[in-house]
Image: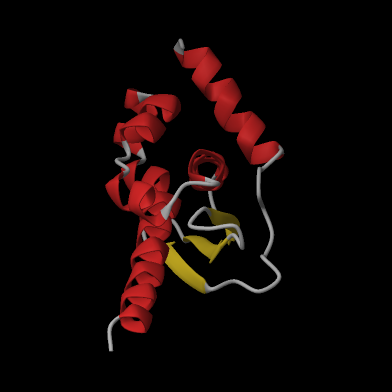
Length: 133
């Protein structure tokens, strides 16, 4: 993608966010903030009844990059397993946002990604506690 295509993608996710809102009964919720510009994102995560796949949603306020990146992360991580989330890196997200934008707005770009990773750790930890005597 060229720079304009990346900007168009960011604007599309900002104006038409994917998976925005709350889950009815989230298993965990993680809120992250970026004090530098006041961005906030709350990620809601639960496990699908059929197995290990996660369901995600988010709410938040902030700059175009943070909110668009949150939408992108929800779309990327939806339906993955906790293990896949644990192993995920931010490279694809940063590539979609674009190296120049991501470098200038790294905290905004990674806010939701880091919240999803933390939510996954929390759920994984709960599963371990339930399994172990």
